[in-house]
Image 1 (tube, helix red, strand yellow):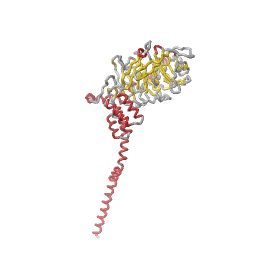
Image 2: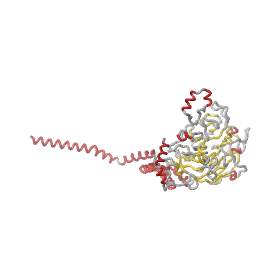
Image 3: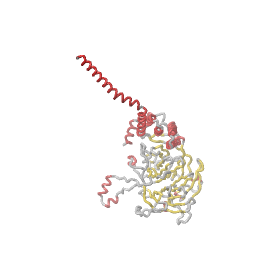
Length: 501
């Protein structure tokens, strides 16, 4: 309903918006945009720029990459699953714009029967340096030491909760600090498969909510057994990818969503799971965390954004990678979209079929499984200023945060979050009246109410003497006047009584 009302309001104000503003800033070299309170697209300066695109040639490989699927970053090291070539590449970022090949891991050493990889689709590296590899077509998850020696493997769960008629096809994995493994497996729709560090299967976590149509549910109750067998089962959807953030929470994403559910907010393509499997992602933004708000068909692409991978930085900014149109959507810790950039194409910074995403500091790396390339992005001055403002606020440097948001506003005067960011910094500095002005400009009712409540309290405290004086005048003065009049009447009556005598 809120989305519809905003669209109607935006249409009603179209004459005003078409008049334009001298503060509108168009992207110079890329395609970067966001959405304002009304849901209108607002173009902005580029938040990221392309540093380089690395293929087999730039990495010094004799054989080109073949449908790479998995990506993991730790420190300055980058691990890449060259899925079609059944190998793992270890890369190193030596300086700002140089990524070099360190080694190729194409077999396993140690005491293991099968020493070859078969379509490795993902990799994770623990703090101790152990390599965990989703060796999909070998139906196992491998644990190797840093030198590639076999340590152990995680295989198909032997449990009633896992359909034993299905093959175990691990596709994506994440590792926590205790060495527990969380796995996304093809055809497993009960959530993430969880293993203890000794390889013991300990159940499923984070199953997505079951959605169904009430008419189908009623019909299923009335149908015969043969008819029910032919109907679609009401089961949770499958995850596509998983990411363990710096706090130990798990980001998971799914592309198994419908347009209707995305538009209504019934679907959550990105979730943040705690250890109990509960979704704790904050969604305080004006819009659902679904990528693009509007979608159509054009250039051979149609339908909504389908988030195929996610990564989260230490400042709690997280990114979703859209495989439909090759875009990256950035959200802050409150679930408000910061910006979106990227797209499908043959230019640097665009993709043919993005398959994996990770970050190195504030820099981003995107793997393209069709172009067989790895793209490195770094923030522009505009993007860095946004990060500075967010991190300064998180560190309690509210005045500096406001200054950084002002820098952002100077570069993009139409950026709602810059106004709100300045308002929040003023709110924390107890400059409530000024904060209210910024919140009112961008229709931030919640923060405006907080600022107004504090401003009202402060005003009352500053004017308490005048308030009591006013109350005294309003209540006591009329009583005093009435008393004086009564005394005067008594005196007058007394004088009359004396005259009569």
